[in-house]
Length: 375
Image 1 (spheres, one colour):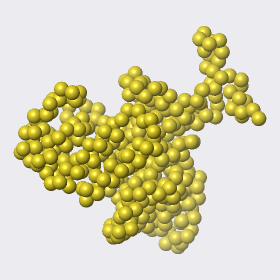
Image 2 (cartoon, one colour; image 1 turned 90 degrees about the vertical axis):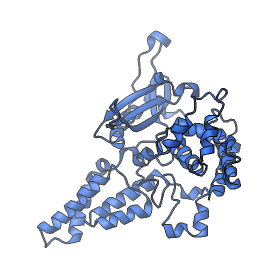
Image 3 (cartoon, rainbow, N blue to C red; image 1 turned 45 degrees about the vertical axis):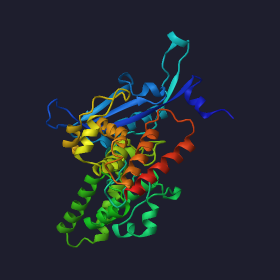
Image 4 (tube, helix red, strand yellow; image 1 turned 60 degrees about the vertical axis):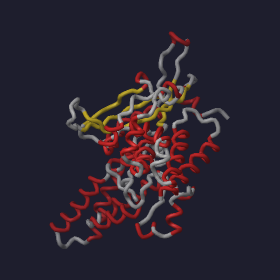
């Protein structure tokens, strides 16, 4: 049976290209004054790994002081839908003697963890349901039980959050907003961990509008107001829902790889480092021989003085060398954590992975060992 894409390509060669989308908030000033800008970038995922991070292959898309990253993604979504539905042959006769067509897909969104939460409609990492990829979590009382606490360290396939489920939860919050009761929306958000920043202004407007309609006409029942607002929501469904949740072939809950900085360096590395501070540690850190480490000179006094303002490079240096300096300065259980962290970091910064199954087992083992010793 012929491939249906042949008809769309009209006999021309068809190539499928994947792009990664990166969004972040940066400062637009050269001074230290913070001037927030939301930027979008893309890079071609079909390239070899050694070329992905080169400046030449990272392409700027858009920036705005006012439009959030999910709002700017709407423009990319329109372009992706156009390319997937209407292939346009590019005239490359001068190179190959024939025309070619392209398809464009969004592969992943390797943003940092907080921006991933915003783009995927997640409330935040400090909420009861702290994971944007699955349904793990619960209230503080629930997580204090043995079974619930143990479940935080295990992967359950049935707990994965699909984009369909996520959209359903967002629409349910919108329907609750049509009742005019803000508390119902907040309860839904706390229970599910879903709070879409793109839809949040619409929810606030619907709550205000429902209360205003009730105040203008006391004879209107709550059911009639709810029905009227829901009819409007049905007609405007695409406008009030996050575009990032409606991109064909892409699921932001599963296609957002976890970032090392906020998960490891600002997580386990920072917390175990806090337990290792001392004057002797600072002296040991400053005496580190960096000849074979391919890093900049270590400024130990600066690192300890501005411990809460360190960047990725400095935290990575701490994670690399600290285990060699704390063996006679900390308790045995803290030393065990440092050894597990060192092994974990060696695995995480591996440029190429030959056996993914074995690699995943090693990652999970060393991470669980470090967490168990630290607790």
